[in-house]
Length: 387
Image (cartoon, rainbow, N blue to C red):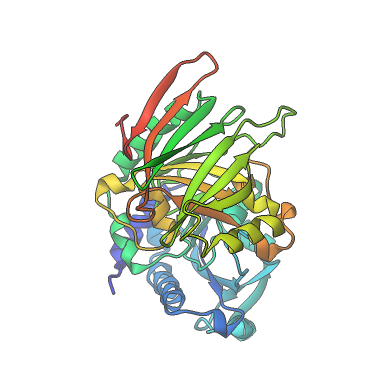
């Protein structure tokens, strides 16, 4: 298993979190299975990585200008981007295999106190903490690198030129900020075309460049994307987002009907052969209408650096263009946990449009425009035209 050395880790922390005199403590945040039946080998490896990073960094806290590095754990929340529990544990012994053992492994501490006491976080978790940490960072002023699904296979993505990554995602933000709309033309099986119109009024784009120099900011690591939330209608004007969004799940292609920024129906692309996931998706939309919210347009850039998918959203979404369903409040939208039936149902799910993840679907063009009819094609045949 490829590992980061203590020197690698020190350089990584220094790069990700440019030094501030206010920084006192770094927390390594990790989730522990509540149900042993939910555990898996990748999760076990990730917990070991968190413990290894803690042990390597705590002995060099002073070299990083910090008073302490702490290992912090909590029982898992069961879904990506669901809210964190009220309490966690500062670990003083070895990490337990299940959440039942947390009481014996460390000190029970409220997340409010955890957030007040730590100025920096790295969170290699099973379930994404991006949404709750983004919201908490704004309140408590810390900086956080969220690393859901982190695996040893992602280590090469921590060694790329993040100055060039920053240049590219900055160009994308410059293009998206003034844009009022985006039109995406998809092609399925090199045959049929489907069009989506995304309303980008009243929104600004966000950078995820893998560096967090400013307080009150949380984001993914590894990173390399610019993202924007389509307008969701909260300004009193109806959102104009509409069209047909094709999504390949396994080998099947489903067509989601989008109206007023929500998926309201789904049908198979090929009615004879592609119904395997249809009932599941229809039921999800019926049970949780908020799941159908168009929550994000993401523009990842890491494929140009030679990186390939590893079947983990944390890295894979940064490789190219993606569209997310569900929660958006952590990105500046309005759909949050209260719009779902329970905390376990809260979801933010990315669909990634690159050949390795959805080979039957190609992004033919992405055109952005303003109300004054100025337009620009920023992607053609899956390749950016602006770098």
